[in-house]
Length: 374
Image: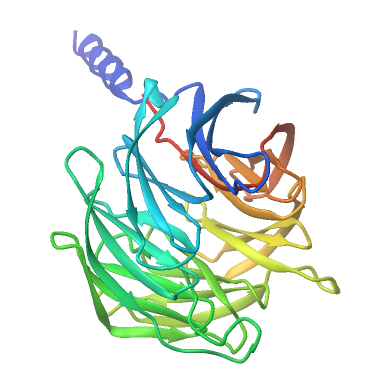
């Protein structure tokens, strides 16, 4: 009798475990100077790696970076223009549709990055052209409300052609949702701001910035799931810098800086995107020029990255790539060749291998996955 009872409990427990869906929905932001018209959707078959096009989901100008709210009910995009804007969409049709809600000014030029905080009540954005970052409140219906903060960066660095002035390139929140970090390519700094989710405000953290090596050009950042480490990909020097992170002060102490390129490579290159695997074991960065994904193993104690692979991106100019929520797939967005390539991730060593599956879309520059359903 006891054995039967235990079996019944075990059966119920197994029945309650969420089962990942057989497909993953993803959204692709593009530059719209050519054939692309805005934000496109695809459905990824997790058995075969095939991408099924869902078509144009939202016509909008230069949606060069996308972000989802934590619930996966709304999508937000920067419109990278001289008079930049941020746009809001409700996700419909079980993830296969977008309904435009509204657009707000980004209060700057060439917005290139945005993120949504863990409460789902704030959109944080970075303006590359004007070198500032800000916050827009999210209304109860998911639309964009008032702008609550705008912070102007200051600084310059050694490259006269690209670093005469600040160029905010990204803004991300730490896992505690307490500090926002903004990589600034022009200033060679990563700024840290104490973030108040209830008010939508940013003020300099106790340790307000960390300076990178001259000419680095910090672009994007990725937090380790533990919150102990942060990784900065440096566009101009083709490096990744690893830092130990202090969530109380926003302080970053450098651990190591490593090249994203193979030894002996002499061509032109710039890096773009960086992600930590959901397991916390691996780090990925994209090379534009070498046209590859650099794969690193992360030391569990020190957080230091160790190169394990350079994989071709499958196309030209991998502006962006994305890991699906389960960490099983990596998809590259090759801007110049106009394609998305599908790779599987080896869970033992982090290496990626091509599925020989691809989809065509003109000038893809951002990929985000919808949360995995049950």
